[in-house]
Structures are given as structure tokens and as C-alpha cells.
Amino acid sequence: MKKRPVVVVTRRLPDVIETRMRELFDARLNLEDKPLSREELAAVMRDVDVLVPTVTDEIDAGLIAEAGTGLKLIANFGNGVDNIDVPAAHARGITVTNTPGVLTEDTADMTMALILAVARRIPEGAGVIPGDEWAGWSPTWMLGRRITGKRLGIVGMGRIGQAVARRAKAFGLSIHYHNRRRVPQRIEDELEATYWESLDQMLARMDIVSVNCPHTPATYHLLSARRLKLLKPTALVVNTARGEIIDETALTRLIEAGAIAGAGLDVFEEEPAVSPRLVKLARQNKVVLLPHMGSATVESRIDMGEKVIVNIKAFLDGHRPPDRVLPSMV
Ligand code: 8YV
Image (tube, rainbow, N blue to C red; front, side, top):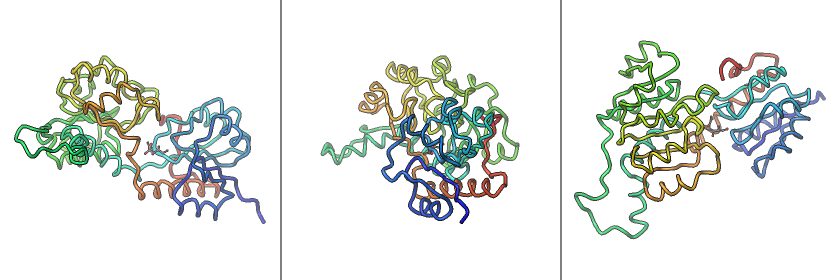
């Protein structure tokens, strides 16, 4: 019988996906779901045909340089590929793929959820009854801020940014955006979106800012201390993309100082570590912090797994995988 390709999956995936992978490949699974150490990853990469990593695996240039010659494909389980040194992989002839498109709606939902959670104080309110702290209704108690009629500035108008815009428009927010490239006119028309070539100018005028761009060398600390200082003191910041896009320390400092009203964060610079100062702000109900849950639905995870399988199959069958990531894209 022909030897089946060795596919190492670094974390637990949905049962249906793992089962299908076992049927198709010599799939080595991680049933304990314990993240691999750098040494474990290095060992795995020496003796594998296809690696399926996730956001918790840092596949840097050093690991890629030490990889065995059999490694030809890194099929990332995830949309963002900032955990992989794509140019280094490319230079060694290793193809990289990701899972775009299938987590767009869920991530956009979570963005709206965070906007509402922060503006309408939902986590704080949700704690009142279980905490046995409800003395009864009062006209001036637990007041949040209305989102209808406010300006939303979307940083990164790709698939997820547009899905956020569609939802936000239905909530009565006016849509503004900054993107490397202006989106086609018909999309601007549909979303009634205002394009800002200057991120600085947009930030200074927004009520809510949502980060929806990928993390690349060009977007690292795009929301720098200087830019964050441009925000209105009433502004809210929401991030469901990557922690590294915002200077988290500067954001924390500005919220502590009352120079920014609050934030809803699903991603952090040093996951899973979250700075104690941010945690303190969460306890003071100034920020809402979620543990990287943007795409955490059963449906997304299965669709992501399906995409990984399709990419691997196409590659092994000698075709160009549909979700190839090229160095020019990162
Ligand atoms: C995933 C994500 O949970 O796909 C992405 O880019 O950020 C998340 O939705 C994670 O990346 C899986 O590897």
C-alpha cells in the first residue's frame, strides 16, 4: 500500500475533522490538546510532510530552517498567519495556507457583541442579579451610551471589516473606514461608508474604533501611543483582530487616565498572558476582556477544519491549494 502522508495536527480539532483526517492521511493528533513547546515543534517538523498549526504555535524562521526536507506544506488552522514566518517558509519551498472566509460572520458578530457589551455595560449588568446586588429599577442607574447615531471607524475593510460594517449599519451607526486600498464604489455605496485616507484624521473623529486588519509588520502598533492620543475622551476601542496592532500599554494608560472611555478586547499582545493593569480595568468595568473567542463557534471550527483538509488534499494531489498565502500578502 502507498505510504500515506504524515500530517501533524498541533491541537485538538473537532471530532469530525480529526476523523476525516485519519481517513485521508497518516494523521498524528494531539488528543491532550496541550500546546507544543518549541522543542516539541522542532522535533515534529523534522519528520513530517504537512504541519497543521494554530495561533498558539510560533513557527519562526529558526524552526523553518531546521525543518526536515519532507515538510512541504504548513496548512494553518486559522485565518491570521502572523504565527508563521511566511517569507522564510516560501524561501525554503514550503507552501503556507490559511482558512479565510469561514470565520468572517462569527468574528463580526463578536465585534458587535463587544461594542454593545462596552457601550451598554452588559457584563457589569449581568453580574448584578447573580451577585445579589439588585435593589430594583432606578431611572439613573446602570446607564450606558447609545450606539445608534454614533460614528464607527473600521481599521481594515477586508471581509471581516465589511461584515462588521453591515451589522453596524443595521444598528444605526455611520460607517467610516481606513484601509490600505479604498474598497470598490459599490461596497462603499452599500455600506454608505466614508473612506479616510488618513488614519489620524479618522481616529480623531470617531465614537467607536474597531480593529479588523491582519497583523503584519506594517500594522504592528498601527494604533500607536501617538495615534491613540488622537481619540476623543468618549471614544471606545474594540479589537477582535490581533493584540499587536494596538500599543496595549498605551491604550491601558489612556483608559486609566480617562483619556479614552473604554475598550472591548478579544485579543492581546502576549496571549494567554494579559497585563494585570488591563485586568484591573476589567474589574473596574472600564474594559471588557474576552479570551480570543472571535471565531469560537462549532460551525466556524468545523468549516476551518474542512478548509485545512481541502488545502492539504489539493496540495497532495498536485494542485495549487485554494488558500495559499504568499509573502507579498503578509
Ligand atoms: C482562531 C483567529 O481562533 O483565525 C484566526 O486568525 O484569530 C482565530 O479566529 C485562531 O487563529 C486559530 O488558529
